[in-house]
Image (cartoon, rainbow over all chains, first blue to last red; front, side, top):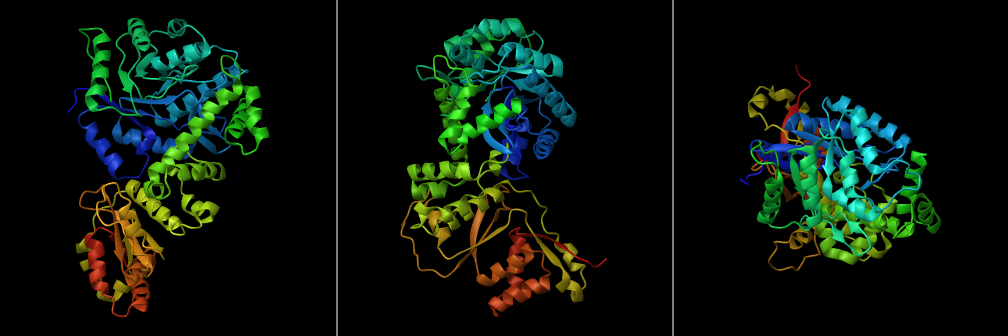
Length: 256
Length: 263
């Protein structure tokens, strides 16, 4: 059994009523803490939250009792039509109020706090009036949830939208970050694409060191879900994160 | 305002006409890249995700028609039958009927049935668990009321009928298949049963059953009483081994329970 302290899965992959996915996840749960990471709740959509989706998430959460339950600060469709992609929001007071209310709704339904993750993006809306880092900070502050801080997404967005990644990290309140994601991106020459298909870049490791110094020993996950390497390569990335986490403290990190 | 942004953005990504496709650019800031180019990245990602989900569910159709054909058809499907759930495992149920009407697939008339088989496999894979049949309960039923019992199928059980040899087509298109890929086309109507294997509880089995067996299980599927299901099966084949088939269905976990209206 690989020596990692938790595993993370996409929640929706376990929304079925039975069979192999749930059987295997239940088995892994015997040896590992599990984090369930949602991609389809559409927190930022103006459609009502799907009761069916919430019920399936709650069923999974009740079964697996995950250490962490997270979703994305994004929308994935509207008017009942889903694009099934993590689409960025216009960062406005309207979006902020909306997302805060929705996080409340989800937490009330699940009867537990969730974490919300900052997404990578390849565009900014002309309507946006609030810097992304303030938006993320305010959602956590007002909704009483924690942040799943994706350091790679911050780097990708900093390059794509020309801002300083350290300004972003400095804006997030210490104590509000409950998990960190690291991943690799693809540089197309004129934009960075968040592919989760490569090793973590040196620049992102630098930001990660900065983040750990600011936010403390936060459970860290390496996301690598396209072009998946052999397991030792993935475990080696997790080990790198471990070496950066402060020594002599209970280790909360790792991933797969 | 947020709603309008999302509505226009969605339409511009999957819109079929150029006007809706370009409307989205007014929502997006230019910069190093134009707004149109930025939308194009999302359009590409959205199509890649949705078409990828279809490819995962329909690997045999993909193997038959090839990557380029599949991608082209899938991009039209995504627009005609949009995803309606945040759970991608729910996406693609209409792919078989889409293929049946797809003009470029008229020379592959069996494609719809192959896709139907793959969707049945997908549903069976994710379906609910069921306890094993409790034979001791059956022993308590008075013989004269046995005909009124409703036998219950496992939640994973799916029945498919095809004029084409779709099981063989499915088999020769499996990645691990090594053998003669010659398909025998001239076959009588094929009756297939798809269900989860009770031996390991996770793998999905596809097996060919007799016409009478199909009629029997088909009746159970619509909650018919045993007597009616038996009549349906014997109408198809007077020599059908009803007891043997029922016993085998119980042993293989296809029939899992019965409902009795007797107290």
